[in-house]
Image 1: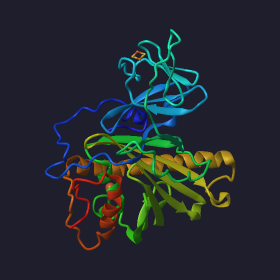
Image 2: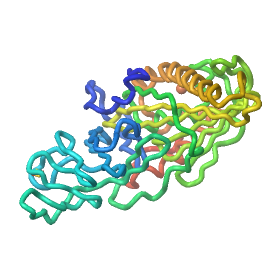
Image 3: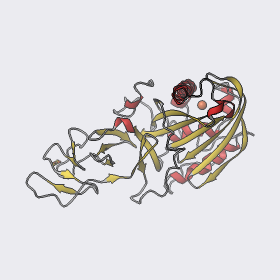
Image 4: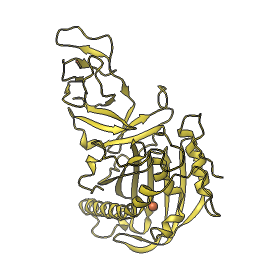
Length: 355
Ligand code: FES
Ligand SMILES: [Fe+2]
């Protein structure tokens, strides 16, 4: 498990593989889903930097050009196969292979070599997006361009100020299912909540609304609140918690990324913004508000990490049930499973419908 300070390293190295079957017990395997998945924080990739991340059991090389553009590419140089994540350099807007110094341009094509005769080939770039201080790469089941986009940022001034990450022996679908499986919040985490309405699906997006009548928010004690979570595929979800009494809103991102079969990095990040300066506790000064919002974000993240540490042993050891025996009150899990089917290729039964 990682801490807030070493979170940026999550997924950077090949995970120590345990003798865990990729099919997760006796059930059928779930392939890596399609969608946008976070591979790094923006701050991990300054201009001129090159970074290798594991993604869906393959290496992906990320780099940022001198102009600030982020690109993601398959790792092997088409010339003679050098790994571009080991020794490549960014020169202007190109990535230069360390072996024979062929340079690859914005569209991936080879634009030069030291003898002035570029190859008539190039590297394959992957679709990449930069949002709210995160870098996302698209995973698809074919070569088609991304069929949908991440939702709009909560606001240009909303940047996460607290980060944490953990690796676990599970699949992103199982991680995100925790949001739909709201009943476990009371039993495992002692955070009783109720569903305000059935989850609503809109293409690759799914929204849930919960209410807690006896919850605790760090620094603010126990009171009631409502929270709304928007999922965009299985790699991005954002929970928004309004605290109108204090003139604040908290944004909490959950970003699970498949790095290998049944192995996931879960990145979590928090931001807090002022929605009504007159209600914020303490001096009504921008510097005081900035300090308070950082403290609230960090405290919320710590609470979330404590909750997730309770989930990890369940994820690490549970079996994937393709047709769970859902009980009364589990309807939202059924809605979630049905929605999640769209992120897999059609073909062999991967069992997403509950019995
Ligand atoms: S292997 Fe990359 S330039 Fe030769
Ligand atoms: Fe949980």
